[in-house]
Image (cartoon, rainbow, N blue to C red):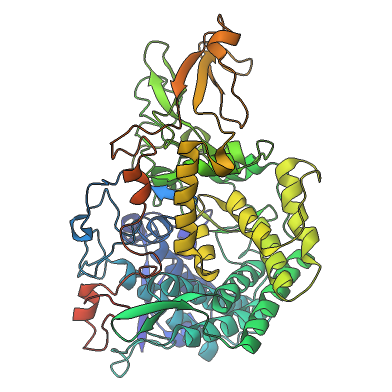
Length: 620
């Protein structure tokens, strides 16, 4: 049997793959038999790079999967929807039916493309490439721990587990394909996801034994998988498998439940704890002393191992990947304001932070002002500078972890190439704390405390370890990082969490409950700051912290303050600028606990040989 070997290893170098078009234009092909490909580590590595390459393909992680799936939650929401639309079928791209839990099997936006350029097919393309590599290495490569072939097999197993985990997160029960395609297995039905969970958890256990830690030619970048990345992924999957999920009740309904036995659940928590323990013991990673620096280095494309980031999606700057466009701090096009600046395209930033969540942070928590800000960046043509500009209303709290001005490369189009961080060391510490607590242990407190102490700069704000405190801490730590939705799902709290956020928004609007001491009015002014360039101004805001009730126009009448109504709703409007009933009541259109998963898309069903159909109450 002959196959084409793609020498993508030579294109990977520092960060990875160029765009698919560039990749195809520059590849060199030779026809080799599989025994040649998989008995030579250089050739085999080229095949592994072909698996990674799917991540940057159109309608894959680049612009659909990782970016689109994690919103709305109790702390984040998708902006731009129209609250007047009551029928889900009328939703369009701007509304994002995924965010509003109003998906249907024939929706567009690439999900029903018939040329295999759709999210479902992209994931199975990557799995097929992984299956071919796994089979070939096992047959011809003599993979052993501590060898290059052993590591490459572990990498293929880990990539396959990564893609299957995402398939389960987004579609639930899916076909289980762990062998390369043949005419005999071309069409298969869905498998219970617990079977897939068991397989990929076992595969990751094997991968951990085979893979190298950081510091080798294969693992000197966070954009490739290492032993500790496999451990962290295994811990995350084990926690999900132990938790709640949406399960079908026949064809017409669904329910949220835990399906594994108590004994298996205990085993899964033990797996999660042990894998996190081993990462900690390995000593390769550490918490960054500066929360801000994590994301600054991410935008600067720092990819060296041994920091807080353990694994990132492997994008190349100025190539595939739209992290800034969807999740970055909003920023107008700079035009000709300053030729030395880095942004010639507008950052529209479609995802925002729930207004009440800003006030849930302790004002001394250093994560707050890195994560969420009430402004965007605009062009001041008069002064010839870019500067911060206060949002038009309280719903204008923006995610600020990723900023165009931090980017190492110019942002000139929709793709910026900033690599999302999939696993951070702080997640390892908090997963350990959660698993240990679930097993009745006491070790987790010290790791929970480490995350808190980084946030506050001291131990003064440490809290006792409890599941409730872990849930809150994960919100404060990972807001905007596409983690929260899947945490809520495994805790069985997706709908209830969003419903609590709705009540909190009403409390913020009405100055009641936990938000009684939040000011309804804010004051802002510009002044020249010492660390700014000549002509640049700094935005100063008073009234964002609880208890800041002074009327600055009275207490500091010559201070140049402007007064602005902030949290009070504008009666009768559906605009998201204000905390209106229309905004709050329509944070989801469908029941999130009945619409956690996507339906299998109509085009996939048509080409499944009659083996696939929808259940959970979704129509085909």
